Length: 226
Image (cartoon, rainbow, N blue to C red; front, side, top):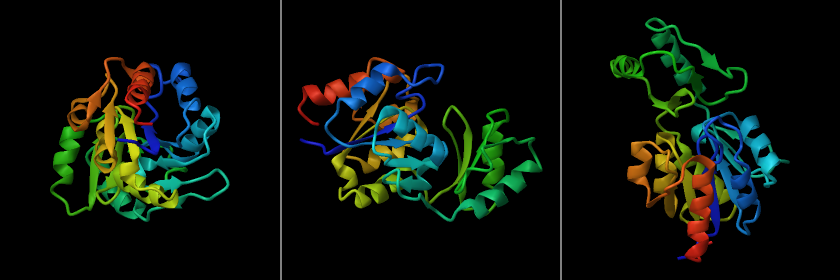
């Protein structure tokens, strides 16, 4: 079994517990001979900046799959899904005091501060006919299209890179990484991952956060898979 690339989540996976980039994980990623794609629920400019800081080529999946780009010198590709998310947001705003995060930069979804009753919001949303879902990434609550996820983003980006999604190993920590694990050839959850991602994983590291990412890569190397 040999993989041609890695796709890795950012926050909670290659960061420390307080959200700083984990320098050990950065060093390990820089040593790799295969392409590394960053995947995040955050905005495209955040993903691109992180890619630049690590020293990668700029291939990123942002906004939970809604935005992708393969290199720094290319414009991002955005799904047309924000309008339906705005309708759901307006409905939920009648019941909750919601705070948008990065509203001027998000193009495909809405991210909210985690200061309201998510379960109640999901229950209310299910009474409506919106083609959206809500997901908690532990850093924000996202209102996103049901048609978009990191797995879909990975399939599209892999095609642009001349690869298949199954050529990738995926590394992550959160429920929004599940579809990315399912699309990839092998999924590794870091030790701080939530129950859903651990259930979807082929391997779970003992270590957490960036230390877990280092362990994940060393596991792949020790098996000769990258």
